[in-house]
Amino acid sequence: VEDQAGALERIATVMSGGRQDRLDGLTVEFDDWWFNVRASNTEPLLRLNVEARNEDLLRERTAELLALIRGSEGGRKQFGTHPA
Image (tube, rainbow, N blue to C red; front, side, top):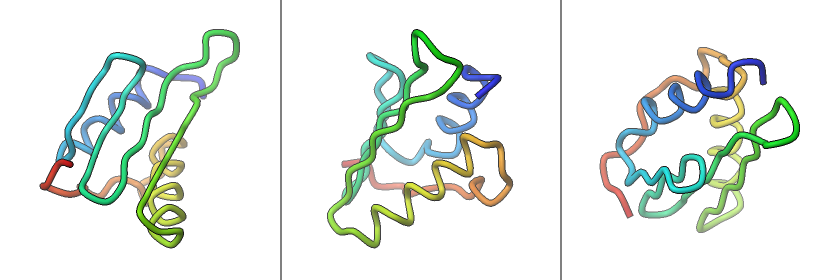
């Protein structure tokens, strides 16, 4: 990812409906899923961890986050209004 900071801000904006923490990158929590994304210290990439209550939700949210990281318009819808 060339613009790590830009990607993190894009994700934070789209995921503004969740509870955000910036202690180690960006962590966002929703009622039934959460993720952490942070810049690598050694490579030009972002590290992403996602957990969800079920496998279908995990796949869906991971795909949407990857689209955001890559700058795709498909990942720009607003997410949730109920933080965990």
